[in-house]
Image (cartoon, helix red, strand yellow):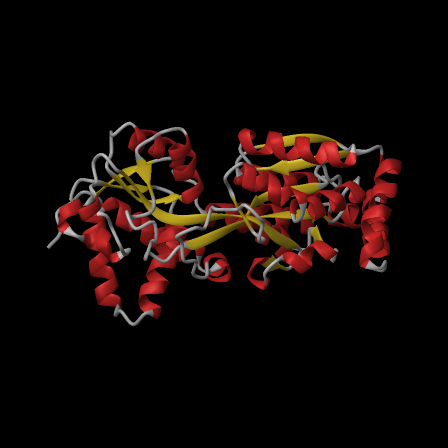
Length: 371
């Protein structure tokens, strides 16, 4: 069974219910929780130009260590945490796993009355689940001033964006056959050339809503998806899919994250997500990953500094790694030739089961002949 946002949120619900009916009082009255709440209140009351210095002072008293739970891959987590350690002299202990694992471990530790993580950096769905149940702390530092309102959420902030675009092998898809819209993926010329990824229900939801918002009827939208599915085979894992695309074992991916395609290009692979003109007309949906502070953190000052870092110097580190930062950073070229349209965070959280079920049904029809 594939992992979906439905299973993620269902897991959160079960563990949250256990927390509320079991040892919830131990969580809210722990000495670590009191200490964290006191610090967050204190720093929120300071002038913003004094907050960083105060956080550094308290972090030294905490022992200059930080426990970070993240779904960043090791090639991202390692240079980012090393840059943070160099700047603040704070040793980072990293637990790295899938976003679902990060959520599960965080909730289980909250249930046990002892938060193991001080800070989190992971996917939007998991952060929304934690924030909705008041397990995260508010951040009001000056770093937020650089963040667009679309990247700010209650108790967490987007740090990086996974941008949705098709990708193709330039040896197998010539300029005359490049896609120029999501609708193009349903064209008969792509029969047998497309690949769909099994977990991309968020992409499916966003494209569907975009088409409907642009005036297409539900019947027209359904017909387009039937055409796309008929052209496609199904695979698992965006990185694995890119490896196959780079090797010429597949011709086109209906969607992959642009940073994965850009990494493959940098390694010399004959792939792209931009047409020959270098300007894509395909609306690009930016899915947010973000940073948060755990409400009952044992080292809240270090967590605050990491949050601040991820929205300031950490943004520059993300650009070095060819990722898409959530703020404007000099030298960032990750969005050149791309037009972003809004990503529906709230809708996906509210209707996760609906979109997962619809996408599963689409995948079951992949590769079958259309009308």
